[in-house]
Length: 216
Image (cartoon, rainbow, N blue to C red; front, side, top):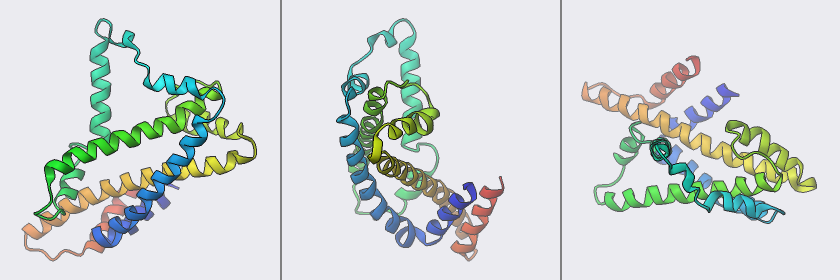
């Protein structure tokens, strides 16, 4: 499955920004939003969902006691760098494709805001359901593939449908991140080759990078 995922990423990136990445995300992102709203509505209407909502939005000030605030800031900073792909060349690569007339300051405000909104929506799609099922919210990766699976199984006949929708969301989120990572290194390689006056074959270059990733 890892190889299939890498292959899908390669096929999309091979088509370029407008022909591959832009076309995919123009469909995937609205679909992601709609499916997320569907899951949120269902999760927040489950009996006991209010506890999950309180868990998300009611501050726990004890976490800041002593040197706890340092841990809070470090975890928040790590999440920020990971979620916004800072320091990974992705934002630089995508930014280089923007027209000269684009307002970078406005984009720099919209992107973190949109990222935060989607993160909150993802929390509303999971935490209310977890608490409604009486399960442990701090299960890490197991929360996604074990705990939530138990939640979907407990929904009765509609469980498989909501499970399918939710894990489709996870796939879309993962493939768009994978596309960004591959495009980042592809853009760097293309620029380096053009600086040396070499003719760039994007399809061949992406295939080489894809095979390298798959092997490693």
